[in-house]
Length: 622
Image (cartoon, rainbow, N blue to C red; front, side, top):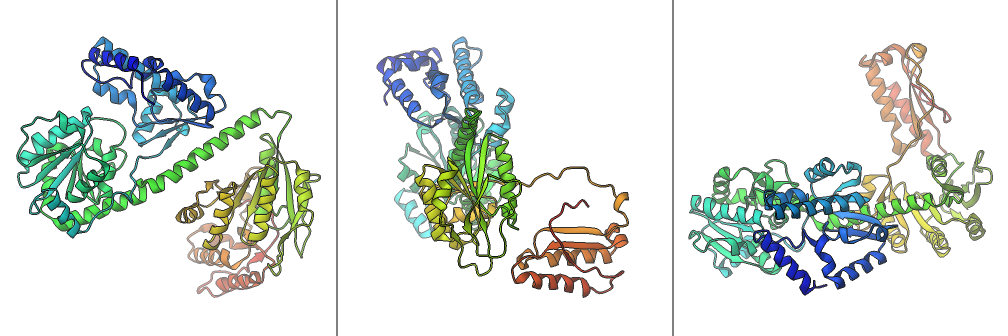
């Protein structure tokens, strides 16, 4: 949306008063009303959106508080703008001081309004907290990055061909710098031209970007000014270069050019300012030093092709693991979605006094299952915060659920085949049960041993068709489950995982899930003193079933070794008692035998062996 002629005229007058410095962005909050068409479009977009992201603070003063009501507001900061602009303008000049006051007003306003502030470096996050008092809990660190598949390293033969095409000598190392017409970049480019190039006559230095327009015409013979470049040409120059140099001495945020350098597989020589938000000190591929030490660093890289290759490969790995938009963008989407849903839930709860949010849980509540116990605690906690929970639990061939304390809140909605694991299915009256819940939110606890793909699809379709928001909490995951989870996510179901390894597995297959750390309840009461139990065996308990994959026998083995070595006095003096719970699966007795074997076959036992015990759930205080 173009700005009006009147706006451009006012901005030009402001530039004149600011000594030739461009301040149109910094004064947008007081001049933006001159571009009525732009402002109308911005207000219309805000009205349409659920999430409003301010990528700069400048427009924020033109948007009324009322227009943001009910929106999830995000400030996507690029810098600490006040700190940056104070490097570019002079407080001693009355007009420039006025401009800086407008910068501070806009930046403070957008951050105060924001439910979430995105910072591109830890230093920026700390500075926001210090300067404006924004809580760090409201600031999310999301670094800048690069599309790593658009800029990739090239083989030696292709590099040589590019050098030839661009007129670069093949027998000299080429160092590359790029920057826009921006004072910190101009300052860095002058260091390249006036200090580094004369000190490294054996090298060729290429300076590219709008910064070239601010450099003197009489540059040293080993400096080439490439001027402004298209994205395609920039990639060609990056691939033709041997080394990247970035002698920045001022600025804020992170230097985007650093990610381009690293993606191209170039070793980098930079200052601490240039490395800010990427590395704190020199790494294998990034040499961090003051300009005075750059000549030596450049000479080392120029004279050692193998070193350049190793350093460039390290930088490429750094980009792929931490700064690739292919990784960062899905994570940012997850951050925004989580923040929006959390904010929406808070506002919905705030408006629901006397009208709680009806929530339907599908789980194993009442069965001998940790997931069912987790769900019972989740229901109780949600009901304390403005929800009204009901649950569809299961019956098994071995047991009916124990639903004491859930009278009127629980129904049997599915059959769980815990014997053959082939006939798990939804109840015949599942549709009537879902309708009777009257829920607007449904939370399904998922384990591969629960509902299979057909029945899980049928259940989620049923929930979505009734206008419910549906979420699946994944408790265990393998690659075979990924296609099903992707299908459900595409249908509008939120996928939630407890374990970060499950999140990483889903991400590997292009599925983004929300992260919900697994919580446990706090046991009431104070622990007993050591004196009160000094005559009793030291007890170690497993809160899961005695199953092979739990490897409780390893715990038994380790504790026995510690006791026999007298490494832990309470064990050597009192002995110990392993305590676990038998399960219905056939591997439970086998695991019990392994525990017995672990205890009995230890050499040099001190005192009588104590066999593993299997007991019911109980609260144990050690």
